[in-house]
Structures are given as structure tokens and as C-alpha cells.
Length: 76
Image (cartoon, rainbow, N blue to C red; front, side, top):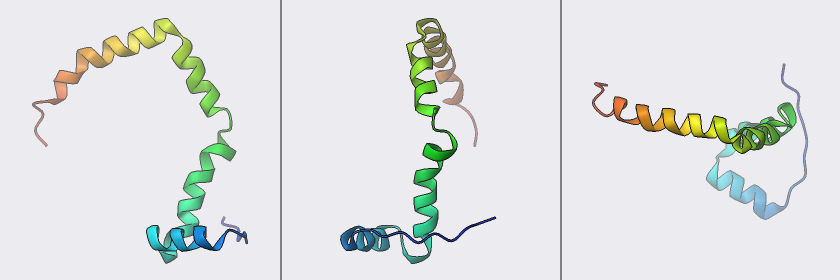
């Protein structure tokens, strides 16, 4: 279910949104920007914690290095 929200922003910001994003896309653009911050507020902390895990980071790098060549010759 969607809810209607009225916000106030600087005129120049609105003009930029209108010019860059388009008339009928501003709400979706703002929602996509806000969503991770309000639905997953600890997501950044979780990513930071994962990055600090040296064993996990090393394993991820090894996996990425080992599989990067697998997609080079794939047929699309």
C-alpha cells in the first residue's frame, strides 16, 4: 500500500530532480534512495563488520579471483 507524503525542498533541488529524474519519476527516485536507510538501518554496519573479517574477506577474494575467468567465454 502506498501513502502520499508532502515534503518541502529547495526550489533548485526540485528543478534538478525535475530535469534529471523526470516528472513522474521523482517519488520513485526518492523512495529508492531512502529505502535502505529506513528498512535496513544497520546494513552499512553489517557490511563494515563483514569487511573487517579478514578470513571472510580473504575467502571472498580467492573465490572472485578463481571464478573471474569463468564468464569470459560464456555465450549470451
